[in-house]
Length: 288
Image (cartoon, rainbow, N blue to C red; front, side, top):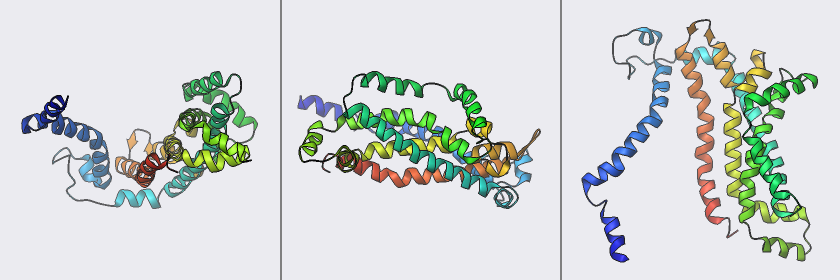
């Protein structure tokens, strides 16, 4: 057995094998993954003269400029779009996590009849395309008088966030030993105390994963934002840069790429900020 392990580990000792099996595939993967972001970044800093000319190196910026960012920030309502997107994403994430925690806890820990079919139905609801849901939701939004308001997005985004977050949290709640809950019940703890002081501290990795998922999906959502919002000052970033920076057949590529670059930064910051918390939560969930 040890000899077989040694042979398996020795396979990567050879430099050519290491290049073929590790470095080259990894390099191709990183290139394919990062090249669109690189192209977006250099386009955002290219002046119009370089964007339109067909000569020179298209993969580099000869004379960088901040004119596209200036136009985006001072000549368009982009700061307002950014604020709208942040507000909608944060509130939608909070509402979705709150509903998902209660739903997942009820399905996994209360043990009522029909819990498994209900959990399966919730997950199947996530598989319904948003392009089908927005038609009946549009009627509800109009009847409630929420059209062209941020609340139209805040209250409709959980329709596709709650099912997946619930399904994800169900898996984390299922991994927590039920004996801990029984001991808390014997000590006189209520269901609310068990949820807040026993279950949720142990389910931190699931909460972080569900929160990142909900925030990212809300930030990048396009169909609902395009359907329920018409005023420029209420638009979100994905809809605003597409509808306001394209005039007929004229595409302001510099401003478009600058808007996409600035719009992707908050999501990248959220991911980088919570990576360490996610890993520590994964390793310390049982100990806590």
